[in-house]
Image 1: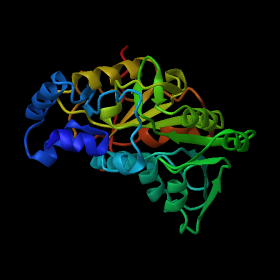
Image 2 (image 1 turned 45 degrees about the vertical axis):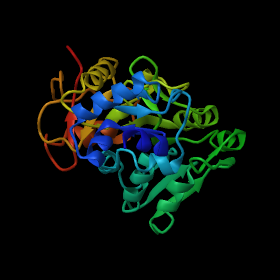
Image 3 (image 1 turned 90 degrees about the vertical axis):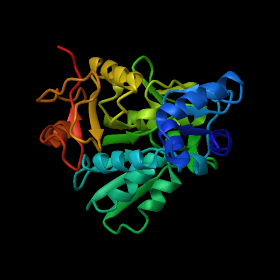
Length: 300
């Protein structure tokens, strides 16, 4: 069952495997380790991929079924960062698509995107203006890429960029498996005063081929709470916070992140925007609310 799921999807999280086969993540992890020893799959942080998965990028149908609950919680919290009348850019991805569905309720919003899926999610929002980039359609993720997309972003200035990717580490920042996608994501970042990365815990500690956003450019990470046994994800969160990234944890049950110390108030963003930007939005949220919990993991 595990091998069939990985073959069908390209990559599957341990949490999703445990849910489908109706067993514990500890048991799934043991089975994945055994399959890796036979050369049938590769373990990755928080999940399993087909052999050679470091350079393989799953298509939209596969990605849309991975970590769905986590993506929903992350999108809910990320949407709370957007204010009425703002202009933002939203990159391609299944998590950003979930975000776009929630942005349809924000009046006076202008969204610039290279994602057909993001644009589709906002197509019937009569109070949201959608601006598409140019470019060449990349069918695997329904995104516009290439020089046309990058040139259409020149001279643009918005308050925030919301981006996803294939992996996130404190050492390299956000990365993806496709060179064209990475290039457009970098152009989106250049247009924004603040950069918000949306990444579920399975992407923490995963490094892929092309860097999109260096760690020192990321203003905030919106993620879900790693499982208690996932020391690697908790360590990566701590390392990101040590480098100045503000960590917002969605869907938390009120407990502390592993190895993390919650502190208040949050440090201000390194890339300022009028009205206090993200600091004002998240810094006032109480812990354990439906909109998420904010953990300042910076060591002092």
